[in-house]
Image: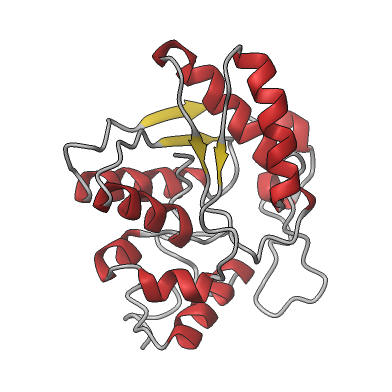
Length: 217
């Protein structure tokens, strides 16, 4: 399971565990400005979700700083804010890199499937089912055995995922691109999307944002 700590990937881990499916969580730290905080939340989620089917978290560190150059995700300059119509959130080749890093790290364990929590709201070129089908072909060739890329949430919205998730999972999830004091900043575009999804779902937001003293309702 590619576990980025967001609402979708944490909800998918909880779903698989509830279905008694074994899960090996993998977090890839790429040196982006939010990765340290994200990694801490992922560890907390895994600790809180301890179950017989949940394997120890595997953490992979691969710096993309040279590759991304002056991208805001590396520099922290001009981080997209809420309601920014010109915001560019795409990280080039991100899903292919995450899948490839995970495959390489896990190859010694034998055959397995790779799962992501991507939803219908992923409008980037690397977010479609067609893209993941092509990834399966490449990863299968690389591994030497059939590699499935599972995207069970790809037909859902973030709002729908929130409605189906339990409060503990939601409280441990993390989706912010400019964290402050180890918390969601409450002002970036990812925080805005998170807040809007909770409102649309009619579910109380358990998140404590740095820009406020208590969770929003």
